Amino acid sequence: MSDSSEITEWLGVAEACEFLSVGKTTLYGYMSAGELPFFYLTDTGNRRTKKSDLLNLLIPGKPHFSSPSTELQKWLKISGAASYIKVTKQTLYNYMSDDRLPYYYLKGTQHRRVKKSDVETLFVPGYRPSVSSEDVAESDEST
Image (tube, rainbow, N blue to C red; front, side):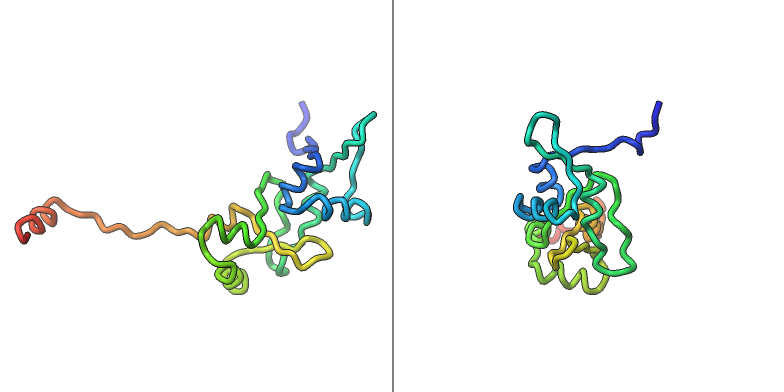
């Protein structure tokens, strides 16, 4: 039995666009420029690309950020990430500038992408004081 890390995950054009949060024109541009290897499905005009090759298009925004993981990640545009957690884009840019949110550039562009899982780490558990039965009784007596 082969190691599961050797399994290639193939994506069609629509899936690849969704994975990177880009349009078809951008994806075909990478293919035409030779920056994104692709393959035709036999006897069809349908293109396929390896997920690992898509990850090679993502460049860490700062040198100390890690390279994109080969794990299945949902990549978000900055506007999509802001909508997802209900903040402004400027708030996310602030998180990026003070290294609380890693970001990646699409190769050859200034378009930033963030991992959905990294955006979710911005949430921390809130403090919720426990209410004892004595506190409830006292508040009932004072009303």
